[in-house]
Image 1 (cartoon, rainbow, N blue to C red):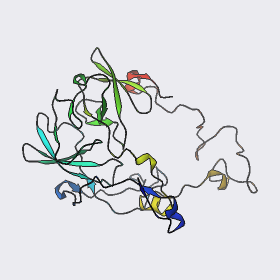
Image 2 (image 1 turned 120 degrees about the vertical axis):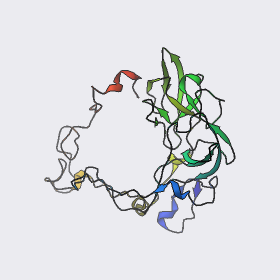
Image 3 (image 1 turned 90 degrees about the vertical axis):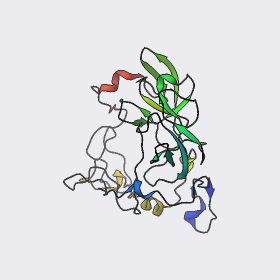
Length: 273
């Protein structure tokens, strides 16, 4: 972690990840594109996700989460920062001469060779089918539906552990503690996602949140009665409602929000605690 000198009150506790492992090079232009930011609005212009807006301009890096280069070997050219995600990304030169960004695992270095095969060497960064990965190995960027690309364990420092292989399914334990089954014909990458110190970052000041596109969060208890179930009263008052609720009056305390008819419900072996 990078510490800062206490030149201002905001700098006193501020920390940020160490970027010394990244390549000092500009991003690969053909894999950049401008994404129009909705700032939490839907197609009618109404806010559907609060506390979004503003922030520094940024370009989206087109990252390959799937197996577009199945059966090919590649070499890591650079390790780079990605403003759209907490993890670092790596630019890989594949055997056919093309370049692609991938999620960089922890301990991946420039010049390392990686491969995407149905069954390959058990080396950090390699991508293969789940049935080819032995029990106890750490994996990330796990495919839930075949051909859709990795969806599980993609944020900084996250990983899952292979627990067992049983009747066409691989049992994996996620970092949340939940255990679920994934078809063993799906692909996953070996290792742990890079930037493992990201959870230790201290924002330090409100302005830094605004740079990242996060707007202020206002407590319901300081609103007016028309704006929130907790609003109103003289000075600091109690909640005034029996159960904790959202701004729209939906009960939140201990209420399960997962859809009981979701297709993946039968694949969850053990819920997170």
